[in-house]
Amino acid sequence: MGENKRCVLLTKKMFINGEWVDSLSGRTREIINPYDSKVIAIVPEGDAADSKKAIEAARVAFDFGEWPTLTGSERGAYLSKIHDLIVRDHEELARLESLDTGKTVEESRWDMDGIADVFKYYASLAGESHKTRVDSPIPETSSVMVREPVGVCGQISPWNYPLLQASWKMAPALAAGCTIVMKPSEITPLTTIKITELAEEAGFPAGVVNLVLGPGEGAGSELASSTEVDLISFTGGIETGKKIIQAASSNVKKIALELGGKNPNIVFSDANFDTALDFAMNAVFFHAGQICSAGARLMIESSIHDRFVSELKTRMEKIKIGNGFDEETQMGPLISGEHRAKIESYVDLAKTEGATLALGGRRPEAPELQAGFFYLPTLFTDCTSQMRIIQEESFGPVITVEKFESEEEALVLANDTQYGLSAGFWTTNPERIERMSRGLRFGTVWVNDFNVYFAKAPWGGYKQSGMGRELGVSGLDEYYELKHVFQNHNNKPIHWFGK
Ligand code: NAD
Image (cartoon, rainbow, N blue to C red; front, side):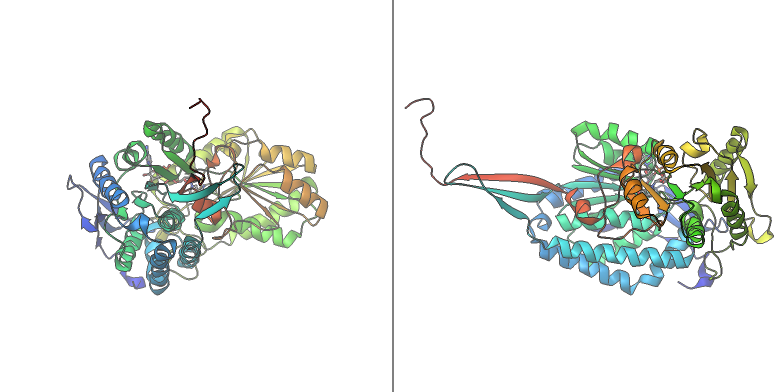
């Protein structure tokens, strides 16, 4: 896909039982490029009826198909094929992701590297032994633990990292032998459609990989509530996550949730100042701050606070905003006008709560940026932990700064949140590293780094940031049931109740 084809109109379909189909209602949705608000694709707008059809296909493929009965190595070979196809189409995928989300192509390329790795990693894990023998305490018996696929999995993903989040669900589920129905965000479906095309090319049996497009209420909620679905894996906001939990109670299906984050980035006065400053930028401004793990909550020790804020502001003023397809661009637009309005309301709220607006807090004025959903990098100082701008996820290019006096205070403030996805801190003191790593109640803790994730390391949240883990061995375990097979080799009566 060339740079000058940004306005090409794609027409795509959903994938159910090995066939590309329109929605049953015939309804469609326009997909918008956030850079210039132009329509880039028309896709079917599915609803509950379409999801039911996809669930039925996945159910039949699981209950009667060969997929769950293949050896792990055989399934791994399919995943390796997808990996190879992602590598082949890497640039096309990256450009498609940028077209759909507005993020820079460089960031999308990075996403695609990670996605390819995820398929490679789970391809290798798929072939590992699924049986473990344990010592039975009873003579002449044997006891074996067998991991078996959970069954039909609904997989709902968000708009900020569309294919990355989908891949964290798709690859382990398929490696385990499950069949899947994916539902990407209704506003960013393009790369999930593309990977479904790659799955078709890789030759998965019909019904193993299904794709439904459409809104959360209807297409998505059916996946969560259907009694024919065995597991629902969801990535998105906390409030939607709570609805998923309620809907999943219909058949007590298994639930894996990756929810929001409000992630402290804590800088101690003994940190390497320049590195901490540099990473304070990386922590937030990738994808215009629309990252679940964004270090948007910056906490700075008082003795370096003023200098750090001053230098951060200077760096933020230089961020190049623009078209993600321009290699010079460092930050693209927000995903939609609706999302920008949400960030604007948080900025207004922060002002009324008494935070000091030190930079940004408005849309850019450049004429070429008026058609897209742009917002300037924004800095608030004088924030306190009880402000809503600190306690809630604004999900945009907004940094809030809190000042602290001691390590104890920093730890208490950082943990004072409903979220528990990730946190980072900066120090050169080994004992402090030990204490802070232990004390922070977050699923990922970065020490002298921020926003690092990779296939082998589990990812997920404490508290309301979710339940279960993606990535790593734990991310595969979510998709297994554990069966205990106990066998009596003696085969003689014991006469407990007499003869
Ligand atoms: P969202 O909750 O609005 O939507 C996420 C997905 O759920 C979409 O596909 C949507 O269509 C669907 N959905 C909405 N209502 C539904 C319902 N009632 N039933 C079933 N599905 C429904 O979230 P979003 O705005 O797309 O994404 C942003 C959120 O995702 C942020 O809170 C962010 O922190 C979170 N996120 C978390 C992680 C993580 O790893 N923890 C990663 C990325 C994003």
